[in-house]
Amino acid sequence: MTQKIKNNLTIEQADALLEKYYDGETSGAEEVLLQDFLRQEDLPARFEPERALFGYFAEEKSSQIISVIPKPNLWLRLNPIMKWSFAAAVLIFGVFILGNRIQAQNRNVAYIDGVRCTNSKEVTALALASIDQIDLGTDEVAGTVDKMNDKNMVESQLQQFPELK
Amino acid sequence: MIRKKSFLPLLLLLLGWFAATGVQAQNDLFISKVFDMYGKKKGVVMVDLSGEILEQYRLTRFRSITIKDDPEAADFARKCLERDQVGAKKIKEVVANGIPTSIYLQLPRLGQDNRLILYNESRSGGLRITLIYIESNDDTEAILKLLLKKKQ
Image (cartoon, rainbow over all chains, first blue to last red; front, side, top):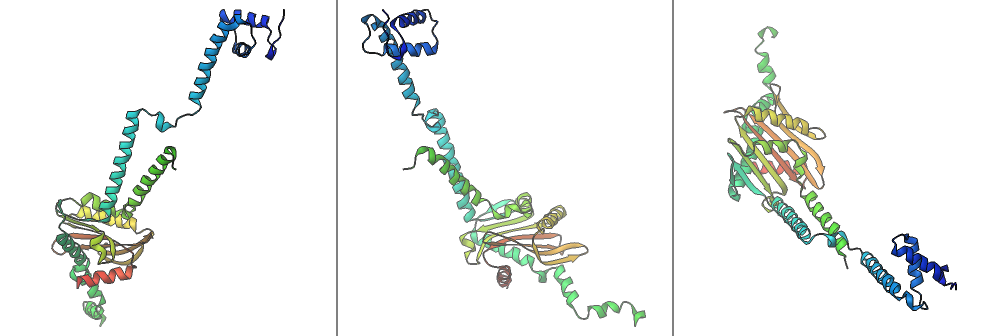
């Protein structure tokens, strides 16, 4: 008797495919056909072992699918040691940057012959001293400028050339 | 609720911003090399001030370096100044015997900061160079007036 069941697979065809399956010769598509066939409720009792077998595989497959669907992100998939190392690195980097910024906002340091000095009075005094050194009135350059501004400079220089008089 | 996935890039972005804004304005200048190279040497006085201590002077950053009896350092400083003059406004320059002995430079503004470089070279009692870098929210004239006032 040729009992035609859903998905167009007859019992004879199913038997033939099962034989092929036990010989390890079925293709993926054929196994899917067998699974669909065995999933049916009104099958003869002799198919129970195969139903159990395929039922197990189907369950395992679906559980695999379920485990894949909620793909955890990269962070959760990282090895715990890696995860904590990464967190520590980010924290250290953050503290370093923050420390640098705080330090940059409030600098008060001088180096005298390579020796560090943080005494604010001394540092301020050194800063003011460096401004004093910029003063054109205290060095030879300033003297030169003053001479250049001197109205008598041209006259005094011309005196070096009496023949011009 | 912020998910972990979106939290991490946000954190990295925040740290990056902190790092970027923490970069010192004078690091784009060649004269910063003078401070780096000679600041901790013998015969050198280097001052670095910022923050609260400068509030009364209305400055945001003050760096100075005085180097004595080091012609090589003077040459190097002059070369750095030459490079930093590109795009800057020269307020004053005094040249003696072909060598610039006094230079005031107003650099292009960086953000809110007005930046000045003052350089002086003196040979009375041995070679002595002084290089000053100033940042302030004030304009150049106000800064120079303040410096002159401080000297009196």
